[in-house]
Image (cartoon, rainbow, N blue to C red; front, top):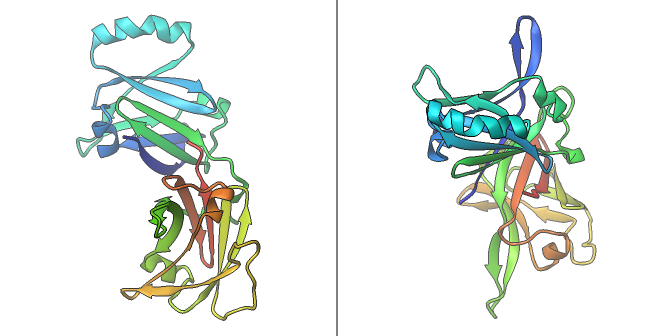
Length: 247
């Protein structure tokens, strides 16, 4: 089973030089089979970094070093941080050569003994002003018709919505792009009409005193959203971008 994690490329300062850094640590590594001292190869495949765990010890090193050199891969080792947890840092100059820069939003697809890391390049994922938007992962759920046919349901719920300007009783203007939906919060209802079945305005309702709203229907499939798809929800005050992730 694949676990998805959204992160950002951070900065590492060494000898007065700033470098890009990708940090993985703790449960994420250990459950994927990357305990401390594991030798890890890093390759660049299909616009992604691919990390593979090979094992521990000099015998493993001798088994893989020839292939690493032949394929011009990188080899790093999982360390242990002060809390005793597995800790892996990618912070060399070659990160920049592969297109990873400080502030980039990246998605890590974690499986047993392998981790794929891909930089997200949607226009909507660029930093807003001097700050990065916050990120969440969402899975498109299924609702069913009376005939039992499933259709996609994108649903946002939580107290965090009220914190960013989407309170119960408010309204949301909806705009659409390729694989993207943008929600903008308003306090008063506006006179909007749906476009080919696609809502342009929805109300924020209360679910156990928690704000929530969403989109549902077969028309979402025509927009490229399907049951089970992973979505990146990126938000700041008054604005939410929802992007379909191509993993």
